[in-house]
Image (cartoon, rainbow, N blue to C red; front, side, top):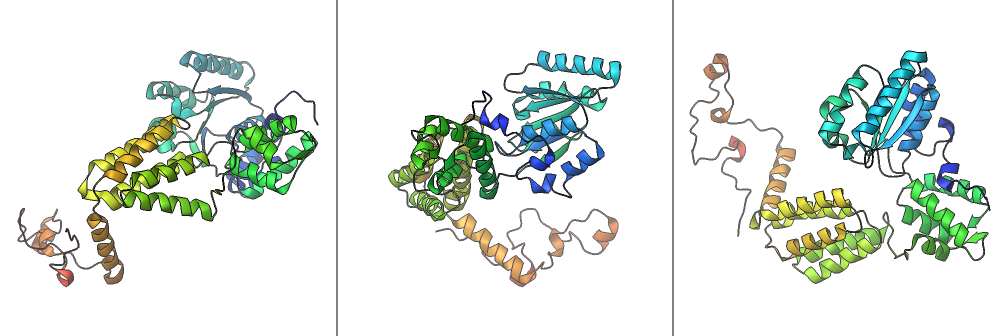
Length: 393
């Protein structure tokens, strides 16, 4: 077992692009990052991807490839004074010997508008090369002026095959071996997060009674979490979410809470659960209780901001509300019927009376002729005139 004091995840951090696991679309033969490295060109970028997918690693490698100073900050703890200090040093290094500086800001979405605004002039004049990392959609979390000056690169969650490669590297580094059951448990607990997986693996190696041979029980002990029969890509995953939705649909809050608890205990992504609740609010509750959509969206937003473990309380609150709400699928059913007609009948001619008539020519052709604001006549195309999609009981 290695006696290196550095964390395993740090020891296994790739030293070159060729050592990067996953992200083939970015670092593969025709990937944009591989091309940047070959050209020794680095614009300001935003790396958007799930936890443990390699954002920090790629930022470090890119900075190293162009010989830039790499300054890493977290938006959770960094202040504007910290950022200004980096910018001051970057300006001095550039003036002194043309050395470039990469300012890497992890969790950029945690910086407010004013803080992000402060970066703009220094990104624009080239004092710093900015690399932001975020797990959230940058379209919503990064201000438009800053986003427009950056190239957004999207990272994907690591696959089981990617994690297998990392496990093999971890086994070699730590001089241990995992049985197949332990490997599967480790991958499920990691949920695509390489850093988390390697941390659990390292702890398991240190705590293992047998030291060399790591079992599923060692992995569970290291993670402080027992594995439930719940594979996020397998049958049990879909069975549980199906039971969850159907319990809310049947207005059975007890069953809905039970299936929610099973998903939370198994480590299901809270945003996956909340997303299904938002869909349910419109699909099954609809106009019977319009506030359901407001509540579901509030739960989703809470899960985004808070995360586990506390957001489980937001989920429970929302689940009970949705389960007890009145149900009405008429809006959903009506739309699906209308969508079917669109797909089967094509784009039927829109009645002339409700067409837009911005020019004299179009008015002369009869566009908008006979339009009455509050007419009770059907506004559907002639082929389906008078058809009723919305059927309320």
